[in-house]
Image (cartoon, rainbow, N blue to C red; front, side):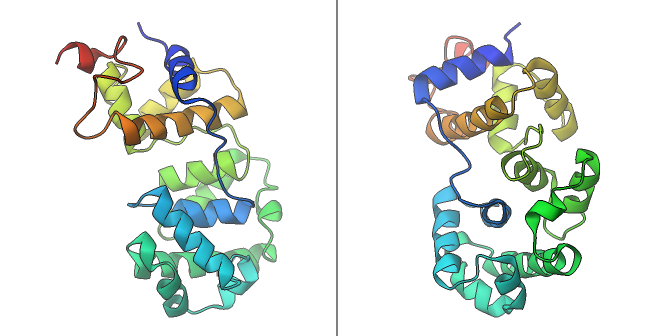
Length: 216
C-alpha cells in the first residue's frame, strides 16, 4: 500500500521546499486563513496587503474598524462582506479576551481546547482552525482541505470525512512540525498545478503511484 511519506518525498523532490505560511505574524496567519476561504492565495495576499497599507493588520486596529471599511479593502478576496464581519468579530474577541495577544491565546497548553475556541468563532471551520493551529500556533495538526481530500481519493488512500483523513495523515507521518507544514503546502501546489478537478495526469509527479492516473 502506498505510504504518505513516499507521496511527500515525491512532491518535495518535484516542487522543492514551499516555505509556507508566506506571512509574517501569527495574526496575519489568522487573517490569511479567513481571507483564503473560497479564493486563491494570490487574492488573499492582495487583501492582506491592503489591510497592511491601511494600518489594520493589528488586532486592536482591526477591532476598532467597521466591517464596511474592512470589506472595501478586502473586496479582491471575494465574499468580502462576510469575511469582513468575521475578521472584525475575531479581532474584537482577541482584544477583549487576550488583550490583543495571539501569544497569550496560544498559551493554552491543550491543543483540543484551543481548537474548540477557534471553532467557536463565526466563520471558522475545521480547515481554517487547523491551518491556524499548524502555521500560527505551531501545533502538530494536519489541515484537510479540498486538495487533500481529492488527492487521497485519487491515490486510493481513503474517501472518508475530515476527521478520518486527518487521522490517516497523523498515523502515517512522523511527528514533525516542519514536515506537516511542507506536506500541506506541497499538496496545495500539486492541486493547483496537476491534481485539479479536471486533472493533468500526464506530467504529474505522482502519476506512477496514483490509482486514478493508472485507470485513465
